[in-house]
Length: 490
Image 1 (cartoon, rainbow, N blue to C red):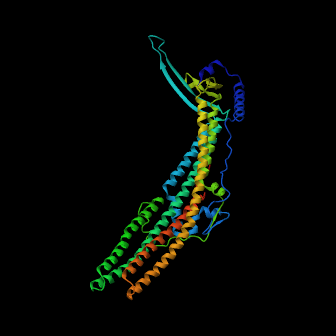
Image 2 (cartoon, one colour):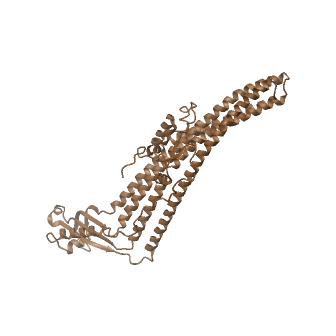
Image 3 (cartoon, rainbow, N blue to C red):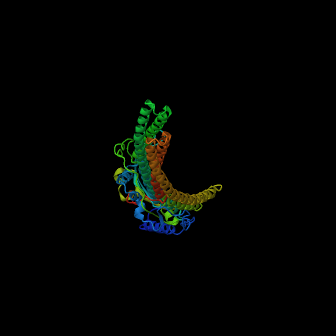
């Protein structure tokens, strides 16, 4: 507490109160009249009128249903996938980290807001001292004090308000980053689930062929022992059989890895889903049609674009924070308390002390450091704008690539399906003609080998087509919904 003020300025009835109120009113008036630095003007993402990629294979232009986009995995009509998605939202650890970052950003905004208000400190002290009897009176002295100190830096030029503005935009950017984590998580769960089903389909196709290959080998081996065919035909039959069997360990390894990755995405230990996903179900099938909105709508929905725009807003506000350092700072300080040399007199009216006074400070010379910091913040704003524009381009690129991949994989799957059907028929014909003695066994081997490869390729194509739909919805920014995650209120 400032004791000089209490000793040199005796209190007049009502004078201190009036002066305090006058200073507070002046401070409040000044704190709302000037805000230095540029005002942020929202930047609309530059987007083409339509997608460059031709819409085909079920892709149709129209108004996207927000509920469908937010829960896009339901279009696959797979209850187990939907259950896994719900579990991932509640259990994924990366999502929890993102939620904690939102809480951190919210607290930082609260710190910025608190700087706009006065501070009040309470203190109390008691001391006892004795002077030297040789060099002084040798008396013991006691001192008691208690009171409050208040201070307030008046935000005349808006530096504090710009700081709050930057913190608010930073909070909103962090919330969009949380949405982005959610979009990625839900897509990764679906992609790994599709991978599990794809490996199971490949195993099923391979095991079905193994039975036929095993039977052929046993027949050929008996024919070789009877001298009806050459050893070469028997060895070729064995080679195809074991080549097909050698595929299974690689498929099992990939299947286990996909299940383990899926478990980690759900926040569970690897291996916890092996029994749950043991039953071999089919790969989720594609819907008959997928509605595609316009590019501008997609950019408005994507969390990464929204986060980049909020970062630009935050950096614009930081220019004002830096600019405010060019101007004077005004403070109001006050003291109210009790002071006495005897504890029994501390609460007497004669022990009251108070002090009040404004102050101002202005950095006159700093070798241009403040102005250089303003240049720094302007350069960072320029970087934020470029990053925003680059994010838009990457978003458009991702959607265009996803549209092409979705349509082309379906065309590829159609051709592979026809080829697999033909290969199955050819294998049957070759087997019948071989048994009738019309063709050599090499024809049977070639037909069986082609059938095995095409059926495996068809399973992969079915999985790739569904995975491309997942990537398409992810590119649209689908999968984030305020009903899925419940961060604290702003």
